[in-house]
Amino acid sequence: MYKTMGPTALKRLMTEYRELTLHAPEGITAGPISEDNFFEWEALIEGPQDTPYEGGIFPATLTFPRDYPLSPPTMKFTCEMFHPNIYQDGTVCISILHAPGDDPNMYESSSERWSPVQSVEKILLSVLSMLAEPNDESGANIEACKVWRSDRKHFDEIVRSTVRKTLGL
Amino acid sequence: MHQHSETLYTASGPAAASPTESDSTSAGAATAAALPPTLNAPIVTPIAPATTEAVLADLSMPSQQDAISGAPTTVGAGASVPKSEVQLTDEQILTQMQAIKDEEANAHPLVDVSVDLAELEKEYENGSATFRHKIKNLSETHDRMRRSRGDAFAFAWFERVMLAKERPELHANAVKAIEDSKDLLLAAEFELLAFEDFYLVTLDIIKSVLHFATPDELLLAFQNDEISNSIVMHFRLVASAFLKTHQDDYAPFLEFGQTMDEFCSMHVEAMGRESEEMMVIALTKALRISIEVAYLSGDTSADEVNFLPFLPDTEPYMPPLVLLYRPGHYDILYRKSHCLDGVV
Image 1 (cartoon, rainbow over the protein chains, first blue to last red):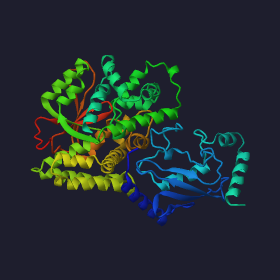
Image 2 (cartoon, each protein chain N blue to C red; image 1 turned 90 degrees about the vertical axis):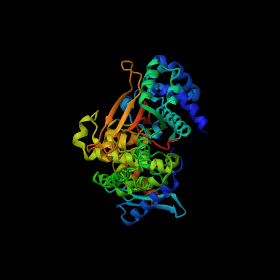
Image 3 (cartoon, rainbow over the protein chains, first blue to last red; image 1 turned 135 degrees about the horizontal axis):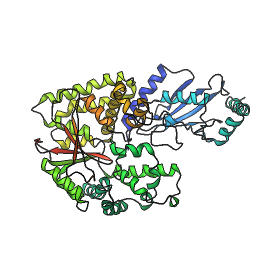
Image 4 (cartoon, rainbow over the protein chains, first blue to last red; image 1 turned 60 degrees about the vertical axis):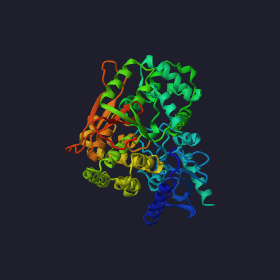
């Protein structure tokens, strides 16, 4: 998009990684999968309390573009996830992962967008609140949207069963 | 390479600034030739409903990515395309928009070499009399121009500082203004982590600007994506920080019930977004620089290009930088009375 911006991206990612190691927010762990490649991260997200995701630990990958932080990373859960804003392949679809103007889901204009003032930490915190509060206005998994809207109890059951699978139970 | 982009400029130039029917005939054909036909036509209709952008387009401050010089014209032209012919999903439209922007971005340098103002006249050779008239008048007071997409302000400023070696206070003031921007950014509650890399690049360039021997050397620095994007991003954040810390003055001008935070996040902070002249105001005041923007439009009621001054709150310490606005982007204009030694 803005051609290669390797050095800036690398510097920024290293700074963010250091910050996250020193001051990791509760429920979140994230870092490069390998020290050789700072553009691929793994994150572990704890299911928020008082949600059907509670008790689960969900692994996801973050893939950063060369022009990060001008362009946002993509995030994809590598475990089974049943959630209105997560595609069936695990790709997370929330507004903070899209720059203004890049708007596949027609987010509300007030929703938080990607810009270089955001960070990995802010993305992961947004994902935590997304787990707690799905947004069925910009759905990625239509089935999950439908169940979430029409039968909350059933929705919770499906989610709990995926949580058990994630934990290998 | 230059030859190539010159040709493209000439082709897209009139399209960029000719909203009138008479102009778009030749310009439209030129644009059509420059873009794959599939990208050119269907894109048209769907842009129009994007209310905010369409409304703001007139006052827009482009950044390099947004310099689709034809955009506002295309919106207008779109009205005549029957909707039924266009069956595209929003996602396809966005993908195509991006393709056009990328194509545009790759075709032109971020900032180009300075050329005689006659080059601007050439762009409008087949354009309307209004444009030719206005440019003729413009050339009485201005002799050169430098095409750019997005970085016009920073380049014009740093070049001025670089050339004014006999006035070292210009350099001192510039360095001070950039250094002070850090406090402004922190006051607006931006995280150091989020802006420091960009800030340091800008600071590094302005500190070392006197070591550049010619504008061409400075130009090389600005043609480096890494440097250019950092400066653009830094300035965008500065504009945003200024607006956020002066909400009482500027929030009343926001439309559609937007808050200043929403406006800044949607239009000012994000790379590649157009934003209105509020951003120019914010930059001039935050960095204490005066700018004059020449609006070259097809408005037939005037013979002259309309100049709009943007002044800092402090006493200006150098003549204004002059930018030429045409829908989609800003170029740099050089006023005759300024002796810009060494500009090739």
